[in-house]
Image (cartoon, rainbow over all chains, first blue to last red; front, side, top):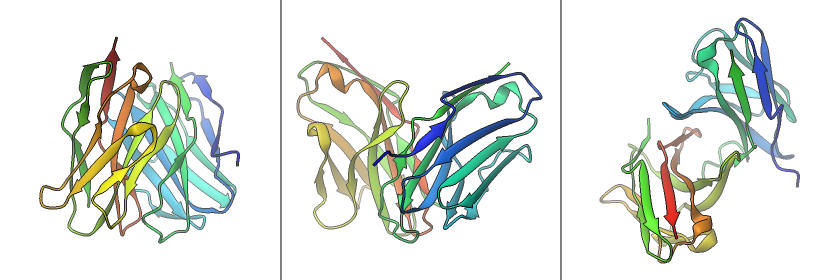
Length: 116
Length: 112
């Protein structure tokens, strides 16, 4: 089991550029979550999907942020245009079976984004 | 919606001493509770979980936690810590709406 795979591990970009973060969940997991971690705000839930369908995106900070899950094995989080305050570590997590709410989440190693 | 409060942002402790990391939650429905650990530059790893049944749950690395419904708490404990336990610890709650909310984290520092 390869676990949740995120890419890239590190991303440095200039303000105004588009950034795309990628996630491959664990095979067979039907729920996928995107979190953002900063010193000031801790772990924030941005959006989550069940069976590739976005269920709750109320945590997405602005219209500059968008997330997609075109199939069960891939998701992207896009920031366009990026700003310095978007600098953070972005985590993707997956869990088995939507509706099985007692399942723990399995996290990737995160993408550290720095916007200059 | 559910929420989680971790009462201590930092907990320094000497090696081989006992430790308790506090967590309180709020929710109007039944919840499932979790503790995760995060080592530097890594993602979160599950330590233990409470789903139902016995209120004392044991996890990896010698950690355990006790669910107290009347006090809405889920404190994490270890009777004797090691240097390698130095990390950030997160309490989390999940309920029927499927999302998972995390506390702000507690940084445990074990000193020799």
